[in-house]
Length: 386
View 1 (cartoon, rainbow, N blue to C red):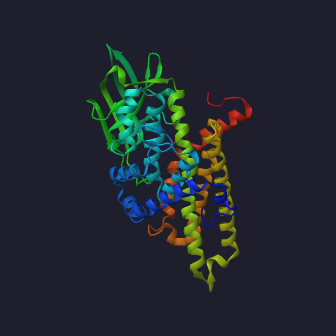
View 2: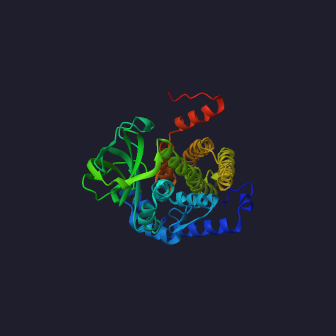
View 3: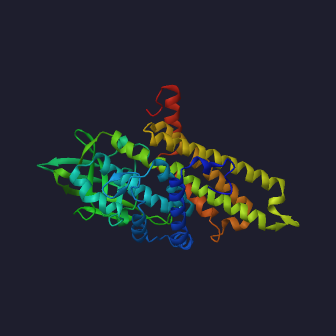
């Protein structure tokens, strides 16, 4: 996996899983690494072009079956997320939102007509998807959403807004969740529908190599068959978030690995006081602690992946992974920054970029506090959410 692989974790992977990882790593080396520092600085990314390249490799919705999807294992998908986020969290977010949120929602809850219409194009990267759940005033509390869908004859009419929506500025379709008289429902919304507007969110200090936007819905009229027929209640969008969180469990390790490998290379070549930085006890202590945490995170991700492939993965287990691995990845990024000294804040090195990105990863798909409460409820049997 990495020079930091202290536990020979590669031996726990199948030959096919290692081959998929190698292919994705090469793709990131070719398409992302040479350009990502510039994308981050400019706050721009060629997301459409990247999506098409990822589609050619089968990365979009790769853990789904049928409709042009690769049907890979959960572990293989996780390894792909790790390699993508070793390039940049924003690049992995593009793939996660496309496959684990927008595509998964249609694949799991959509009609056959919706699946045939959208999934092959999305798997190929020809159609970009977004997932409209978060609202300006209701981030961690989706049960309080105010976006509404009302019946008007045979049609649905949607009003409201969604905030911090990855891919929104370039999406052709969004899965939008709204409150109805019979509870929360999901809708497949073509972005060129009259009344739908998307505004890009700028001036971000994090995830700058990712396109984020606000979706506004003003008297958006949709036919009856725009509703996801099998999505009833808040449990449906939350299940989609569980899918996305699983990819984050692996992805955060990629950002941490890139930081750790950068710090290792820097410490062994940078000379201070007549010796390499790596020759100082404090530096070795930092590197050792970070490598131990990274290996523990990989063991956790692999266990969750094997559970998923066995059909036994539970949502609170994904919360354990997201809580631990993102928190530790951010700590690793910050510590690596100290090893690089002033160079740690330079765009010539990836460490500060990863650290800034991980601040967003710490928040989206459930904040650390939310996942602590999920785990706490599992431990105590008592909900602290209300």
